[in-house]
Every structure is written in C-alpha cells, then in structure tokens.
Amino acid sequence: MTTTRIRPLVAGNWKMNGLAAALAEATAVKAALSDSVAPADVMICPPATLLAQMAYATRGSAILLGGQDCHAASSGAHTGDIAAEMLKDAGATAVIVGHSERRADHGELDRIVRAKAAAAHRAGLTAIVCIGETKGERLAGLTLDVVARQLAASLPDAASDADTVVAYEPVWAIGTGLTPSPDDVAEVHEAIRGHLAGRYGDAGSRIRILYGGSVKPSNAKELLALPNVNGALVGGASLKADDFLAIIRASAP
Ligand code: PGA
Image (cartoon, rainbow, N blue to C red; front, side, top):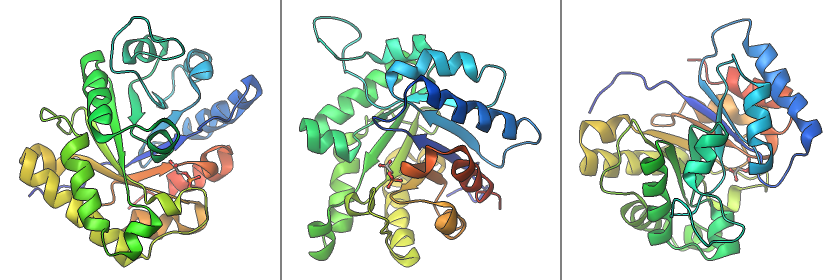
C-alpha cells in the first residue's frame, strides 16, 4: 500500500437547497481561495438548476463542480432525469451517486448505484459513491458487513483513483449533528481501504475515501486528520461560505 499522502477533497453537497441568490456563497468561496493555494481540492455540488450558472460564477477558480445524481442512460425517455453527459455539459467534473437520501427516497439499490457510477465514468465524470449504515445496522454490529456489501455491489469493476471517490456517510449521522467516534470512523475507513486495495490494487490504495455526516467547523480538524480519511462530503455546513471555508482550512496537514 502506498504511504504517499493523498490530497484531500472537500466537497459540498447542497442537496435541494439554493436559488440563484445562493451563488453569492460560491463566489465568496472563490474569492477566499484566490489568495492562496487551498490545502484540498474543493468541490461544490449544487442543485442541477444552478450548475451552469455556478460554472460561470466560479470560472477561473480552482472550485470543481459536481452533480448530485445522474441517470444511468446517456439520453432518452426519462422525464425529470438528468444524464451524466448533461452534468458534464453544464460544467460538472463529478457526480454524487448512491447518496442515502437517494437510496431512501427513490429506492436506489446497489446495482442501480453501480450503473450510475459507470454512467459517470462513460461521461468522463468522477463518481462519488456513497455508502453507510443505518442506526439499526450499527447497533446490531453490522456496520462493516453493510459497508463491504455496498462497496462490492455499488462500485464498477473498472473503477480507479482517477475516476472514483468513496464517501462513507453513516445514515444516522447525516443532518443530525451526531458523528461516530473518531475510532469508529477510523475503523470503517480502514476496512474500506482494505476492500479497495484488495479489489483494485495500487489504484485502490489511492482512491479517496471521504467522511460525511454532520461535518462542521468544530469537528472537521479531528475527522480530517484520521488515517484513511481523505476529505469530507459536507451537507448543511457547505451552504455558508464561512463554514465551508473553515472546513477546507481544517484539511491542511
Ligand atoms: P450533513 O450532510 O453534513 O448535513 O450531515 C452530509 C451529506 O448528506 O452529504
């Protein structure tokens, strides 16, 4: 396994939040990052309706953009859905797939998530593949089993560090203010690393593993310093530039 430090990725998931006025938060992040080299790759995943405008507003900066979901097909009769190719066309370089809110709200199973990740790759996007256990599964001691099963079934066989990021997001920690203990996060990330290295070899030892679930300025430093935590997927705290910037700064070694 390589011991070279993996450059962190701090990605903001705006979820179903943000009208045009919220572009000001993205431009505030752009302005703050223009003074110095960010300690992490920085990404914002706005609602699809804002993607093209945000691409315009953040042009010339290091801010990367991502979608929050995509359809597995590249085009066709799928009313209301968005193809990975369309996200790319609007300015995205990545897309989140398999977020637990998609899995819960839309019944997305691992095989659907894998097809979406493959669609992202087909379109030239990085797939940010989310996995994580429910509270019941954690209490039953099933966390590592659940994560292993989701990884095995949600990741395409051809994934590599160039096109894939894994986000470990315990469902019970999302939007609740609760986080697992640092030891628990480190344990799960070590297990994920073992799976990725076993399946993808050297590339698997370089795939970024983000932690997500109630990351905020006050806990970011501790979480981001844990072994095999290569960044964060941030929901609520990414909506305000100041909080998001504090988390980005907390990723410095
Ligand atoms: P949260 O969401 O930071 O608001 O808990 C994280 C996520 O769902 O990606």
